Length: 237
Length: 105
Image 1 (tube, rainbow over the protein chains, first blue to last red):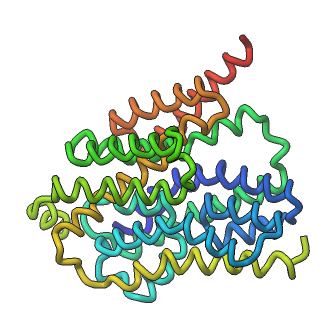
Image 2 (image 1 turned 180 degrees about the vertical axis):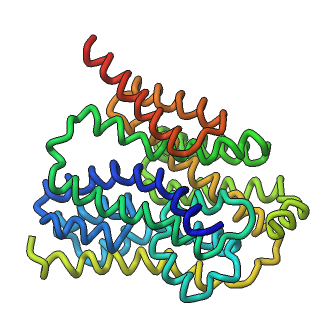
Image 3 (image 1 turned 45 degrees about the vertical axis):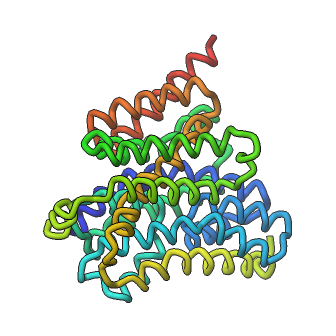
């Protein structure tokens, strides 16, 4: 669980981010931001949905409070993830390192770190965030500088990479554990219901994810609490 | 866009986002005792990722057929436990191929 292993695990995330942040950079440049400003947003925020919503608010000249509230709602899911990950860190993650690492605790970094067997330490985590952070900044730069040069078809195809990666993270554990499979299927169903059903579809994307995560995790925790042995195995590994 | 207009916005965004990420991670140093809460947190990643993927993946490529092809390829390769990068590349390739075929038709 060293830096190199973390770095290797982070490379696919970084590649996925290239395409997502490329789109962001392109939109920022189109909206009137300079290349430096687009990259500055990416390097200080490191969050796709939040940046996109924030960019639109900035361009619309929205009140500062609205910007803060929107970021809060869209990014509240990170609080759940950070809480979940806080239980998986080993002794090398002192308060200072927790404060440094959390700057870059994105959905995908969290997912990969959570998928590791046993506790994770700081060498692995810093390795893990290196490529995603670089990819996020570089993609923004390329998108802002040259977004219009890439054929639409290629850009569209790259857009699915990040979701394919999510599928690759949740499917293998679902194959081996029935409760995890249930959690994945229930959450997908609930998310689709909230997207398609009239009345529910007004809920913003950030809130919808939080509702799905809390409802499904609580349901599974109640009816399929993780066995003591699995936990001991994980903490000993 | 002028930096004096731009900078306060971006700093507010960055600080809010950072605090949301940092506070829970820095504050919870101890192992949580409740079995329910530990189980809850164990399921959170799977529930979050699944909710983020569905139905968003169907709209990620610009057309439903190419998105379905990408999803199908991703599901099969993930079931075979291929690496994250392999799954991501082949899913994108599937979307590209289907999109190219559609544009010829």
